[in-house]
Image (cartoon, rainbow, N blue to C red; front, side, top):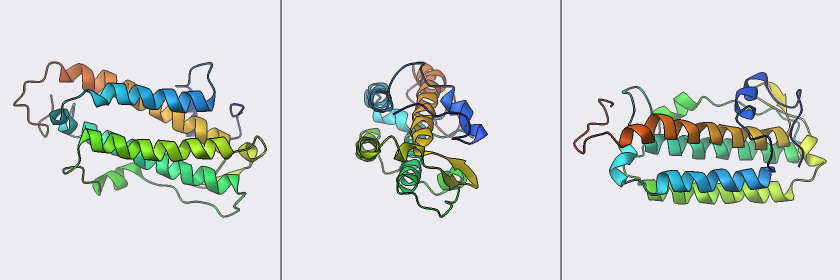
Length: 186
C-alpha cells in the first residue's frame, strides 16, 4: 500500500504522519509498533499502571485504553471508507471518552491482551484492503480522508504515544518511590 498524499487526510493528521519513519510498509509498521509497545509496557510492574507524570495527565493504563479506543474508531472508519460508504462519520473527542474510562479493575497485561485483539483486527483489514479501496475518499469529522491515510495516521499516532510513554512515563518511573501516590504526580 502506498503512503498517502496531501489531500487524502485532514491537515491536523500531518502531526501523526510526521512521526512515521521514511521507510516501512503499513503492515510492517503496524506489527513493529505493537511489538514495541509490548516490550515497553509488558515488563512494567502492575503498580506502574496507575502512574501519571503530572496530576492532570492520563495514567499508563489510561494511555493504553486511549490507544485501544483510537484504533477501534480508526478501524471502523477504514472499513466504512473501504466499502465506499457515502455517509459522513462523526468525530470523537478523546477527552470526553477518557472521562468515562474506568481502568481501575484492569491490569496492564489485560489491556495489552485486549489491544492485541484490536490490532489483529486492524491487520485483517489491512490485508483485505486493495490498492483501489485504499484511495476511496470518505468523510469523518467533516473532513475527507482515505483508508490508506487512516492506516498511516493510526501508525503515526501509535508511534507518538510510544515516544511519549518512553519520555514522560518510563523515564520517570525509574525514579518514583514505591509509595508514590499517582494522583499527586511525580
